[in-house]
Image (cartoon, rainbow, N blue to C red; front, side):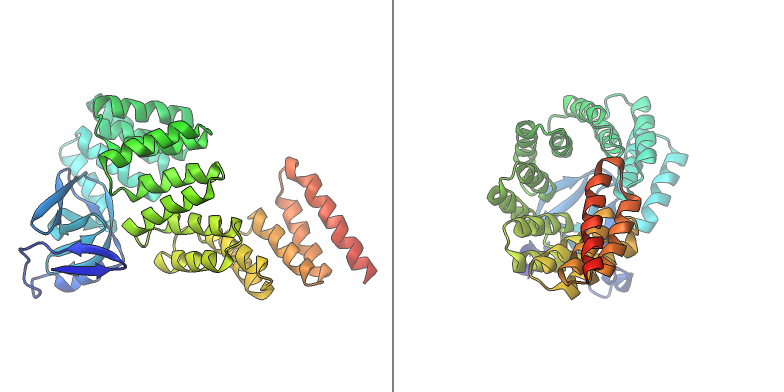
Length: 360
């Protein structure tokens, strides 16, 4: 039997636990949440076929629950093979305390990456490597931690070591591709993402990072195509929705952009609301809908009061309305948080607003 979930086909496994099984109510609450794979080797099924082996520490988005099976972007997984995010840190820590080994440290390192705690991710990856110098997953997680800390060259070196120890590790190619993009080495980024997709054709993350490289090169049509592939594989994948929206803004396709930003905010309100609201505000601004633009810029600033682009946009929006008092006030706030490189240009704009205010 095939069901359509957000436009993606998921095949039910043949053998299912009865719907009244213990814990069914708790499982039902996981829909729309994220879960963590307990150990290497968890199987994702399409029908009767085990379609993929999943690594421990991997994060999955739950789309549907059927009995004791969870429908995720990779297929269907047994609920016993995953745990909720709150349990995962305790689980891996207890595993390390009971039997310290490279895999346990590597799994927890991957979890720290999910949480954005890159210092701890790096510490756990280093400990895993001390226990097993050829643990490819640990080298990959080490690279993710280094990249998160802005140490891009070191990250590339770590991803390369991961690939050296496991040529089939698609994640290492994907994240090395992302790192190459940060350095502006776009051809290398494309090559790594292509290899990742060859190894794992259903990697929405590899499509996304290749799209980011294409966007940086201003190859908008190709970038949108890759972001769209990522969204088709994972309809709630917020980074791809956000970045495709940015490309639509660049192409002045504002209605499509707003639709993507709306979907991003709805899919995961926790995802970098500073950036998504700012981007949607820019689309409203371009359409001349200043009240909505201001509301989004304010939403962005509620999350980060010193976010300079939103402060500048607030000022510009008020200026377009002819309200140079408020425009000057917001521009002064932007000047206060500006670095030395931006300060002169911002002051020049403030002077223009002040002159217009004096003329009124």
